[in-house]
Image 1: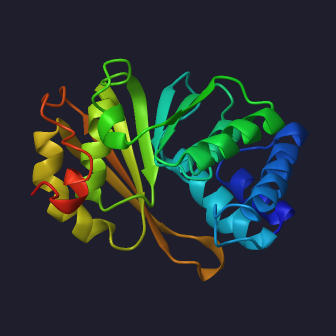
Image 2: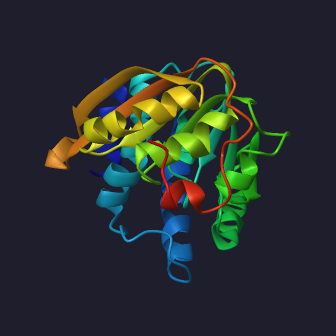
Length: 238
């Protein structure tokens, strides 16, 4: 997917890029490749693949959920900024917070935000388990989102404590979404969530099935969650 195809595909889904936004994606790509030479940010480096498998894939959440409002968004385990930085470029009014457990990635994101001229972005070096228990962030976000971080039962324990009551948790998943969701049903309920909708589609150029799992935050998460660091991954809620 070249830049023109990327722009056209977004336009077909109701997202029109300005000249500045197109330039921001070009700067994003160049900065990603430059920093990837000194630290492991992505195994995908070819421009066409980055635009399809990282940029476009990240933005697909905006095809199904209304992100045109002034929302506070928390991206858990964003790595090199996916999905929240591509979404921030397309929807500049979003107020984005990213938490990631590796300080090197936070350094990259701070540099990237400066290069892109982004405002209303904040980056935190922390484990999701600690972050979700921090009173400053717990139950504070309109939308909590994560892409390719962990299976849904684990991800729910990381993300649902951060969503405010009446907010949303979005898990961006591959083809195993349905089976993962079935395993996570009890955990989602326990953590104060309720499954809303699953949007299933295929990436262009036969690049595989994707699922946008939308979960409503119905009530506050019990104080016991998230559990100690490492516990959600080792002993997922069932």
